[in-house]
Image (cartoon, rainbow, N blue to C red; front, side):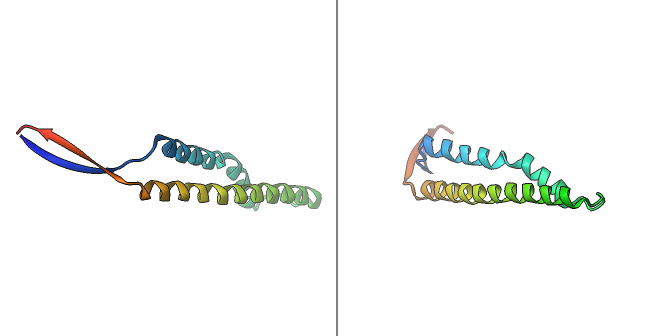
Length: 98
C-alpha cells in the first residue's frame, strides 16, 4: 500500500460563486458590444447628420457604461483570483494498493 500527498488550495465555495457571477456579468455585455461593432464597422450607410449624431450619442453612452462596468468587473475578478491564490494549501493523503 502506498500513500501519496496531494496539496490543493482550500478555496471557499463562495469565492467560486463570486467569480462565476463576475464572469456571467462580463458575458452579458456580448450582445450590446455586437451593436457597437456593427455601428462602428459599417462604412457603407448613407450619411444623415441628425441620425449620425443620435446614433453616436447612444453608442458613446453605451460604450461608457460598458467601460465602467468592465473595469469594475475585471477588478473584482482579479481580487477573487488573488484571494484564492493566497489561501492556505490542504494536504490530502491518497492511499492506494498496487
